[in-house]
Length: 270
Image: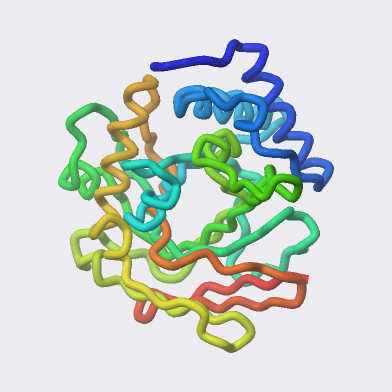
């Protein structure tokens, strides 16, 4: 690991994101004050933020993978995905209505969620191990948010991937439902989705948009987390990455996402 931030700085950054979420007031990007911070620093900040949530009573229910498309990786100047943690207070029931005012800059993405039946860890995890460890796959939506400005209002500079990782990879909520998919029965690359907002189709896609195969993202995450001594555990939900662009969520919006034979998910904002 390559670190430039001491523990006090990491704790301060975690608290600032926690306060931004609580107050509804975004902070400036972390790299403004810490331009030399590394990816490892950013994950330490994320870990400290998760520890704050757990201390406040939250529970880890899974993990998310982001930046899975080549275009997004090039835009963020990285050559691999990123990851964050799913907590129980982020879980939203299918068909729910939530308040747009509870989020700072909410956007919705279309994903598949892998629900694990067995433990996954190690440097040699591949797609075969992921499929063997998966109890089922289920349609999912991820609600992403930004506790630091995506674009700074003062200098017009966009936040970097290090800022996003420190902000728990922008995760704010997760919704799943529809019909569980037995991974051995379906070619997951061909799972479709049509996202409509207020009756207008905004995005369509196939799950192959995630690294050509969403299973690859879960395998990557298991290998990556093993560096930190963390395993993917039975019962955890793993969001494999979005295969659509994020769509803005505004008060009054109603989203319906049709996964064809696998069901329909919906989420509304007031």
